[in-house]
Image (cartoon, rainbow, N blue to C red):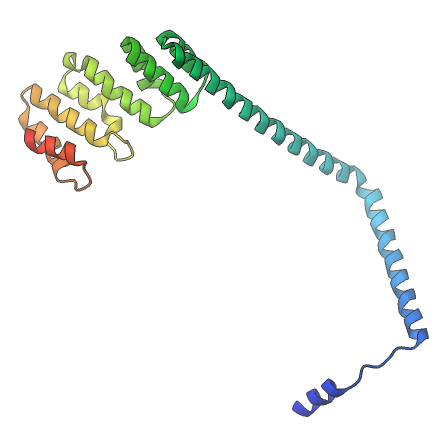
Length: 216
């Protein structure tokens, strides 16, 4: 095997004659003609499909560009509307902006409107229909702050049930709020269950854990 490889390695390449080069050139020319003919037949047979696909791709590309541009313009208009409403410190304008846009900006505008006029209807709307979980959960805590005295402890617990998950950014605050309500109505046993839940959780914020231990 080694001897064969060495012989092949040392072997000089065979030079082609002019006739062989001419034959190769003719072969390539014929091959190209055959391929060109096949290509033309394929195009003639399927040109409607090819045009349809090309047209579809063009429509998708143009539509995508329009959508991107529209989305960018919409964001600019949203920012301008929000900034104008904030500049006036008008809760009604902020509420109107919140109703005309969507996303976290709408939630922020409605929350700020509530802070300006303390209209419980605004914060209840945010708690019920907010676009983002963070603002919905925050709004629910504010609703309890405004109306919790007129609610039973069971009603408070049920109202904050959506916050009783660590997916909520206000999980620990909600748990402490429920415990405080049970303490307020004299149900210490139930309150202690909620307080223990906080105290035993190593991930609980220090301030909330400290408050729970003080109430326990």
